[in-house]
Image (cartoon, rainbow, N blue to C red; front, side):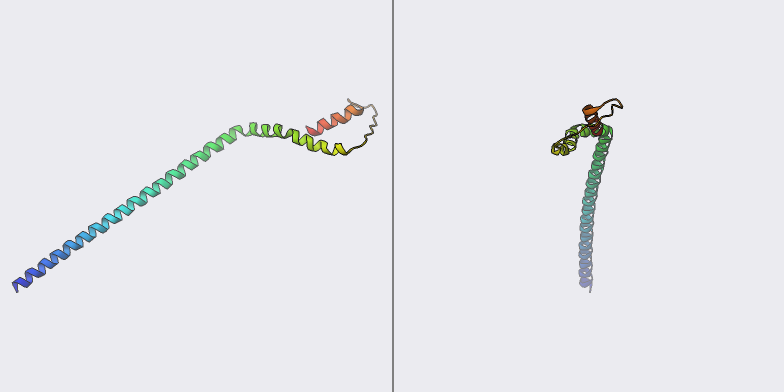
Length: 120
């Protein structure tokens, strides 16, 4: 019976050793997976933080240069606006100007002055 008891203890010891090895291996894998997940989360966070900073810089730049950009857009688009305003006049065959002589300008200069005011 003594030999059987020794064999049982040997098998239990081997089983305990195997169990400890499997536990250590599982903990190692879990730790590795956790570390990888934390690293990926950190990368995602840093990327989001960088994108937010870039958006803030762009917003600040747009805010500072907004007025100048609007004026530039208006000035660069002005020829198209004037062209569109003048296009219907190209179809006019004849203009008759009746002037009473009242006001700052009379006659044809009044018409061109009014066109300038409309464009402005």
